[in-house]
Length: 227
Image 1 (tube, rainbow, N blue to C red):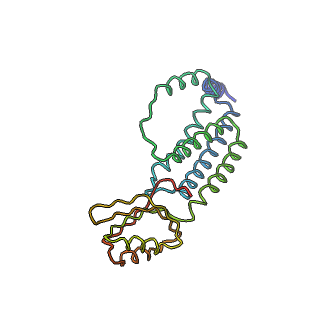
Image 2 (tube, helix red, strand yellow; image 1 turned 90 degrees about the vertical axis):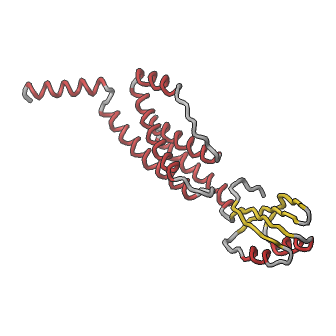
Image 3 (cartoon, rainbow, N blue to C red; image 1 turned 180 degrees about the horizontal axis):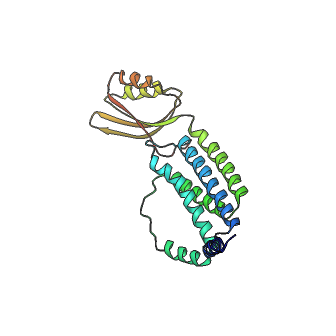
């Protein structure tokens, strides 16, 4: 090694040391960031598979991957340098997020992505993978019940009492619950929550064919279903 190579190596080692980038840290960072991408993508796929809303937001789903990677990076930076950790704590304390989370399950996925990123950044790879398996199992158990059918709101207008009884008879063994019944002059508005276990909506045509029924509307319900 000549003198020029020696000075280049010394400058590089000095720079790397000032940045806290040792060989062990670089290896840890590569493993953690790789796992954060993989586990973040798995969270993305799980969110898409068990999504129960009406309109799927691909931008929110992609945010889950980015959130996992960024929190992993922040945790790695904080763990490597005390000055950076103090600066980041001060900077993040003044950040305010204004985006409203409408579905509580979306908040769960966000917290899940952040938790996985922090855990990977802390080097607890086994814990992060174990948490992924446990959370996937928990979500599958609770969402498998919701996947048994889709919840709809049925709104029907009719002008005879017999029509209301006939609507209930047509629904038959379907799981339904009366939400409201409003009578205006001689027109009755019936609102019912029903659980459709298949995409077959023949019953809708049967209800429309009932004498006295003016119109009937079926709307997908995106709220919580209890039953």
